[in-house]
Length: 519
Ligand SMILES: Nc1ncnc2c1ncn2[C@@H]1O[C@H](COP(=O)(O)OP(=O)(O)OP(=O)(O)O)[C@@H](O)[C@H]1O
Image 1 (spheres, rainbow, N blue to C red):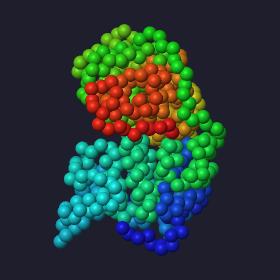
Image 2: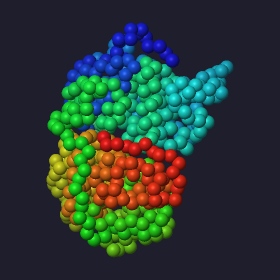
Image 3: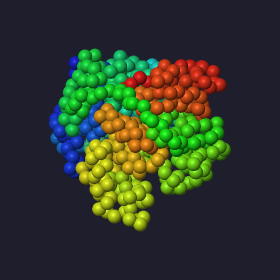
Image 4: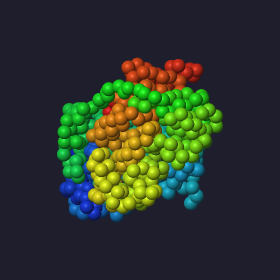
């Protein structure tokens, strides 16, 4: 490990002073000061669009600030690109990993910084290096495994090992637990704590209050590009952080009233598709049915099959009494199905198209259209209404979708699909990457949608979300629905056990998955 250049333990690992960064029409960072002590886990929080990613991009050399200075280990630096930042001891784990799936763990870890012997890459040394680093930091992973075969939690470990191999002393993690199971998230925090105990520094960008309260030492909160609070984690609370972020009191973990179920809208009988079998379920008008499960137990495949994006191999799907088992995605939409996919970038939105056009997508058959065409004035009006209703932070409806922050893109997607007023809504991970205030708004909108007589099938990895919203909860385990509960029965312990295969199903209980508690 490269020792920090300054021996004084009081010298902060990172000091940002007066960072200002302007985009056309937006002051993303306005004279931001951030001090991160060596050996601490520092959480950076704020609502969607508050300026967190921009600040980290400035720190990591991806954006040049319009004003302000950066000090690393007490020394003023000016980075032209992330290569400069890495050379100064910074490392960043992005939300989408930057690994080669076809290479092994060891090859990925040493890539572009290979140990050499007589000018050749020393493969044995590379594997030893991975083993050493993995052992030193509790990051167990097989050096010979092909990265493409690893689950997401282990791929994230490879990213961290890669940074450690390059001598990173300060790690920046951007929403690292968004894609992890609760068990993987706990394992990640154990690693981060051990890195901090060894004197490395962690900057954590996240929306999850629970992990900030349990896993960080200090919190800086941004709002509209300004620092609005600097808090010591041990002396603060979820309510205080939430209030700092939003500027108002936030009611956390609200449990909504039950729905009044009417006619069956979706009727699924003995459905099988790749990775899913024997699924029977109904969703009625005026109810939300939640599907809980550890990621990777067939939930996404089920929803894709229902949305018409994956062939049904056996069984039957009926929407409003009509057989749609083999209907295309477009036919299903026309029959009354709206869909919020898990992947808002690849499936849900078009980054180059304007916000207004993104909001109008799929509306060719709704009241927006005139004989299948979308008049520009109607598109603009529709966009303005949804921007207002969902609090989407966009400079104007004409800016490209790609200029929105991650959470605002998610609000756009939900808004667009709810605006279809379709009898059935399939919605996956509706609040991933979304800030606390927007989580509340999206939850309220889903409840209002249900109360207007629509049927909602909700898939979420957040147990608190399932418990807060769903009138009935199904648990998926190894591709099957293994348990079903009414709202009142679906407590965290019961669901957690069932998610680990421990209830109703034929699978033996081999482990009890740690349970996500409310954020
Ligand atoms: N390349 C860009 N062009 C134009 N505007 C941008 C660009 N990048 C960010 N912005 C704007 O700057 C503001 C801050 O965005 P930023 O991505 O830093 O927010 P964030 O706090 O990371 O949000 P989230 O929690 O949603 O990821 C937002 O209003 C955003 O729309």
